[in-house]
Length: 181
Length: 317
Image 1 (tube, rainbow over the protein chains, first blue to last red):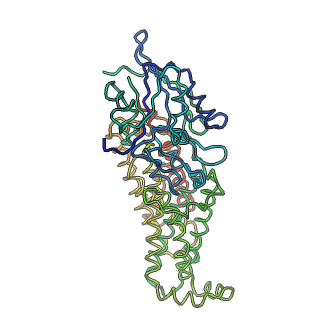
Image 2 (cartoon, chains in turn orange, purple):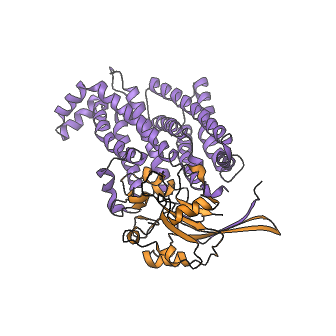
């Protein structure tokens, strides 16, 4: 690690039961509009009956290190802050939707007020030393959040000791949402 | 071997994102078409007017750069209609982001206005210039423009090329949409814009020599378009799992019928055949051919815009 802060989220797919507490915690914390969500639950089932395998994942913006949304934004509304968190400055957003089209994870949406909205890794909570709302509420301890540049930290330890993957690494976006498998 | 994915369910139902991305509708298709048409008009009129003429050219050629500006304004109008946060439109002009084709486009659009307006003044024949000068105090501007004739026509040409390529790159750089992941979109949209520009001019009365030249240029542009489309499909078909998805959409998948019937057959093949018959047999050109080319240009943007939004990475395992 080069010592630069890099926030990541680690999702333990072996523990997730898809209870959606993370989705509701996010809605409550961030006051997302009706019908929209910044995080969501995906359930994939592989195989041929009766030999099936299921994986449940809590997904959200990947806060990519090589974020295509930041590159595509014509006004600088999509930007990065400390720790690599990708944010949207509502005041600079024109609602042109280039960032939505550029996101391989379809993590963004147009807020009914006109600007583009998405997961902020609860930057307002992180700034005051707290963890994200979804991590705080998770009843099965599926979700972990932290600075991966700290080798002794929880997320670095999990990634060092457990088998993991990211979604669509072929995009080259270097996503920061890791799934323990 | 990985087991096959049997079922994928998600609790996310965000409007315009799920189940299929649909953030850009007719407004963007029309804008991309008009952008290409304007690019074609600016390039062709600059080329046709490059050498000063003894007699004034046909009226539509004299008016071409100004007509292009009217069409460009219409296109910017539909672009504005698409913005979700319309009051913040001024934000485009408080920043320049070199990595964002949309930012390049916003600036190219405003730079084209003064350049094309001055070219437009130059293009006017003595009769139209006389009428205009009676109404507006532009004698000094006109004299200056006449001294800078080659520079202005060159800048209009460059602006047209920039506009034409950018409308393609706008989609081509959004790598999350597999169907747009090809550098061919830039030259393809530029070439399609050139054929649209020629077709638009051919709808009006022209001198025999200009008409002949435009029909030949149009045929060349249509042929190049065909080659670029073939390269695009071949490129997709040979570019791994993601490219395969994009190729499948055009070769037997959801967008096959509209793409081949409207874009390739109606917009390229039929006009190309009609134009070659017209040239060989010295038949007078009918409005049907240019109308087909224009409709084909609109269909190219509309089909690729929709197919691209239907081609996210969520389709890959």
